[in-house]
Amino acid sequence: MRDDLSVAELDSQPRTIQSIYTLYSQDQLYVNRRYQRKLVWTLQEKQKLVESLLNRYPVPGVLLAERESGGYEIIDGLQRLHSIVSFIEGAYPTATGAYFDISQLPTAKARMDRGLYEPVASTPLVTATDVSTFLDYTFAFSTMRGATEEDIDDVFSRINTYGHRLSDQERRQAGVQDDFATLVRELACELRGDPSSNILGLAQMPKISIDLPMTKHGYTVQAEDVFWVSQGILRATDLRDSMDEQCLADIAASIVGGSLLERSKDALDEIYTQGKPYRRRFELGTRLPIPLDRVLPLVPGHSLCGPSRARCSACQRRDRAGDLVSRARRTARLRDSHPAGR
Image 1 (tube, rainbow, N blue to C red):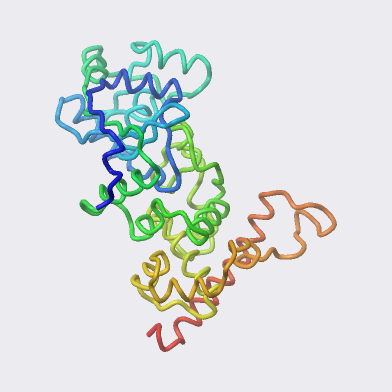
Image 2: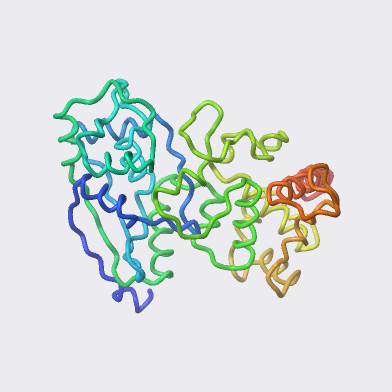
């Protein structure tokens, strides 16, 4: 057991939804992409949460970490918090089709008047009683103070071992800080078209989250346009479980390690675990941060941006995507014919 766990203090106090929205409107709630996943809740999951709140049923609390630069980093409760603020801002209705009455919350109305968001619809509205019940609902709010990155990673990892809450690849990537995990994370963001800094405000999460074809939430990244889906390698729903990152991890480890990675969950787990055989094989392949062009070399020339002109970022993504599709298909063919893959 680590000796410094007592350094991080845990402050627990209740907060109403109205006070949570105030924190949100003041840009005090942040998300760390190093370990947090994207917005993945379905409309039905969001509506069930709202129904529970309106009925004053108990719901899980929220865990934050106080940031030295101000504000709070969300450790547990990202999906719940975003579902709450997006309901207040009219992004979706209750299961009975009623929208939050924004005029009843001055802070939300002021944000709307400033053009910070646009409600999906303005009628029908929930009753004034329901608005009051919703805003007065008290959440269990716990805040870690003086926590190190190691503390936060450890707590996040422990929370997500209780039940099936993260996919295998999300679990591998969560909180890991090394060249390989960074490579996979950055390549995945670039190829999906959602590159950003590691730390984002909660309000920015829709910009890096994925809309599935049959469940539109107004998120920026369209699953059908992501090349893994458009090329038929993955299904749109696979993106929710970070299967695109798993494919990249497999390809990168095979290329840098010098041979095909064994076709198993344990082999990929070992790549992310210090001291394991596959990890050592990967480390022998490179002693320096992995250059991007070793994994995804750019295709020379482009129909939109000619070879004599600098390529725009969108065309660069398309070039890399085309090459990665070829590599993915080639890797799949080789794996199917490789004895270890049978």
